[in-house]
Amino acid sequence: MDLVIRDVDVVDGSGGDSYRADVAVDGGRIAAIVKEAAAAGCQRPTARRVLDAEGLALSPGFIDMHAHSDLALLRDPEHTAKAAQGVTLEVLGQDGLSYAPVDDRTLAEVRRAITGWNGDGSDIDFDWRTVGEYLDRLDRGIAVNAAYLIPQGTVRMFAVGWGDRPATEAETDRMRQLVAEGMEQGAVGMSSGLTYTPGMYAPDSELTELCKVVAGYGGYYCPHHRSYGAGALQAYEEMVALTRDAGCALHLAHATMNFGVNKGRAPDLLALLDEALEQGADITLDTYPYTPGCTTLVAMLPSWASEGGPEAVLARLQDAETSERIRHHLEELGSDGCHGVPIEWDTIEISGVSDPALASFVGRTIARSAETRGEAPWVTARRLLIEDRLGSTILQHVGHEENVRTIMRHRVHTGGSDGILQGLKPHPRAYGTFPEYLGKYARDEGVLSLEECVAHLTSRPAARLRLPDRGLVREGYVADLVLFDPATVAAGSTYAAPRTLPVGIPHVLIDGKFVIEDGRRTDVLAGRAVRRRP
Image (cartoon, rainbow, N blue to C red; front, top):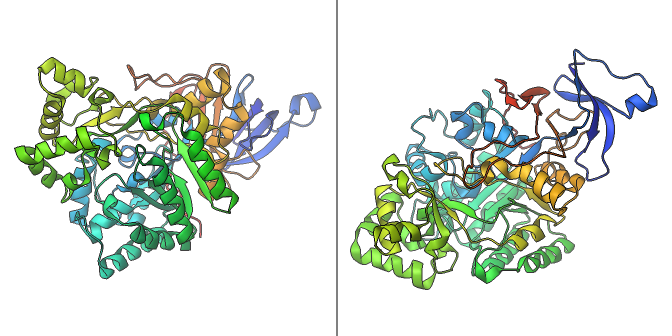
């Protein structure tokens, strides 16, 4: 054997009781599990390396169902932000915007559109255009495994452009073809960002047609739906109905109920989902264990202001009359970009800027910066949007702790960090989501038992991704494993110090190889693309 992990408490991902065992790894897979080996006095497995794991728990590697590491995995080979949390698989291509499938025009546009999420990509060799070529690029060696969702907004950008109009029949056929090709090349499903342009311009009929293609390949639809605010419950109902009509599995991205209008309304969402589940719907969801959201500042604008793409947005912002119209929608009417709720500038904290000269804005709310400058908040926000060329990211403090706790208990819940790694002061969820679940919500507060919590982070997402040999500690399964100390595991990241690594996770293995060993990142790049199984 390559490795034996001795006297470890196995939390196997099933949700059942943990047990003491020796676990042997060979050839990248779990080769043997000998329960209570020492007490039974039976022959214990031997190996070239023996790791004494007394006091530690062993679980399957954690699966991040909502990650924004599309370029970070290529830019940063260590990718310690996720590896140190015990993440062994990330799902990329989220929120309807990513870098495949593209042509030269689309690539330039999407790079510009999501600079705030992933950087401008000037340090990346974009030597791919198709989904398959992107997955091949990942296969050259990355820190953790990655699966990919076809981004519906990028597909619409490719076939239709940035216009707020229905697609023609020919354009719809082209989008179907792009989605089918992406699924054939290994994507696990399709994502949407229905508060982001240009994906938000797609009517339900168009989305249904694309979901039918996804369903034909056994994939799932992962929408960031049309509202998490004033119309949140209706937006969830829309997605349930849409996927029912398409016959497609549904996975709800960062599923929560935000803003003051939704305080305490998580039970309403879960009642809706329970009814659909009882009727046979295939639904799962993911959340992160924090209350603020994170996105770009430009995403707050009304959709009409973003039609035509980034240059058109900047032109509108620079026009005084149009800028005043944008302000009116944001502050008085409630723009669709801000989920139908009038924006509260004291909840909008700048977390990152593209231009280092604007770093003084980071860590302050728009309201605070405006007060310091002696100007109205919209004047400050407009200035920042223009000077940073739409590259600013924000934390949006609009969540509710009781909603977060209620949703994470649900039987179809999984974990997703929604981690944006860009910016001087990123959301701490990027570095802390999984130890936060294990430490704060399982051990300290008992919202979930340890066994339940691990199941939410491992076997449930593996089942959604239809991975037959991941997500459980079982003989024959891939040896993507995490060893953590249940007594001390905790997120180190905070809002003040968001890039602090977690504690209590000394070892992480991918494909049977140590990527974290004794709490330190090794130089191993054992991750690969995880493609949809036929």
